[in-house]
Image (cartoon, rainbow, N blue to C red; front, side, top):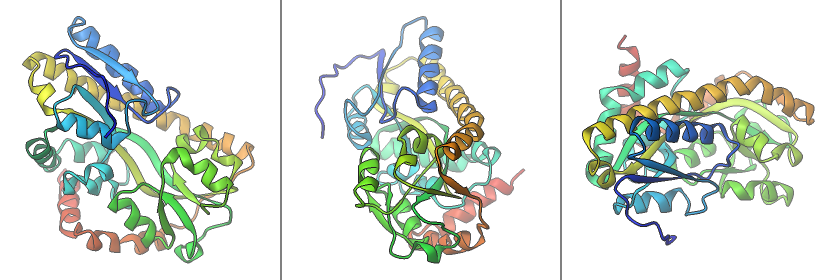
Length: 310
């Protein structure tokens, strides 16, 4: 664990992210800070830290579990280590649009997962509607079907749902820090990667690869998670302001991502990348096994029931 000198402060929250200050999610965190501080009349201070300068996501989650006044923007795949069901948010081809995302994260089913996370691990979900984009394949050759990925060493996140998804798609999953992807591709340690447009462009991965295949295999859904102990120390009014502000900021950040996608795609093409839109049927079929492998088949039906319940 990375040690820090963060002192306990009842009315101060230190929000740490691995992202840069140029990322849409950081813009959302800035909105979160503005809303909380203004609505609490500065009684709650939000401090933002970029580039994992106080520790990676796992470090911050451990600190939050111990009661430290920290928060982190983290995806469901990483949280599955602590609460298994929430990992399904990173499962392949689970959700089709933002309306379904909103419906799921506002449902009693999702709240039951969040309650388990809080009761068992002392982690409080403030909001889980931060959509970072659709993940696509980034390779040095054309990809049309899962068979084309045979033997391809592909970087992914070191969480079960991600690893099994990439494996089911036909590639060899290679967990690696995102900061090492550029050099890994450049030095041929990696053959490929998978990421959303903002991350591809921000990390200049167009310099070390040639093709993007628009598989949209994973929707990168993240939540702002903090210490339940710290949250419980606040007044009910402060708690309401913080959760409402987190949800508003999540929608704000998501809107930026959606608004930027077409422009980023155009800029990636201008940088020389070939971007292919393919028939996804073979990828959808190939990744169906992930749900059974991880014991998510029944849970997926519960999710579909929520989405059908209009």
